[in-house]
Image 1 (spheres, rainbow, N blue to C red):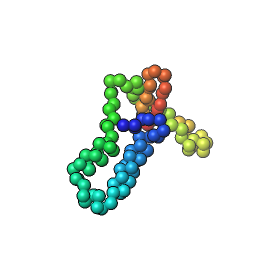
Image 2 (spheres, rainbow, N blue to C red; image 1 turned 90 degrees about the vertical axis):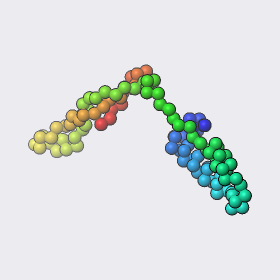
Image 3 (cartoon, rainbow, N blue to C red; image 1 turned 180 degrees about the vertical axis):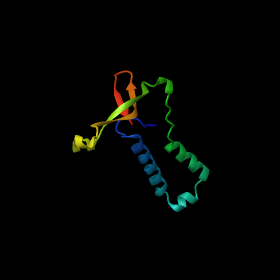
Image 4 (tube, rainbow, N blue to C red; image 1 turned 30 degrees about the vertical axis):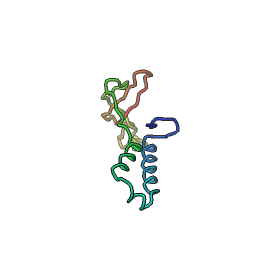
Length: 109
């Protein structure tokens, strides 16, 4: 399987291309070829050629961790002035993802 080979793009692109190639292969057969072929053999051939191995994630080998935290989100209504009493930022419950090897930190709500 060449799922992660250079030039394949994303996983979605690879799978979309694989399905398109399978459909084109089936469409290329004439009715006579289909009727005169062994159906089980044909299914086995197409399955072997276009199968995709499942992706396995090893949770114990992950380099990221997830922590609950409070995240500040900008309040666009705070620009109306202090007369309305709108705070500039709201505190929201969220999560922070840490990547161990390079200290990358992503936040998500």
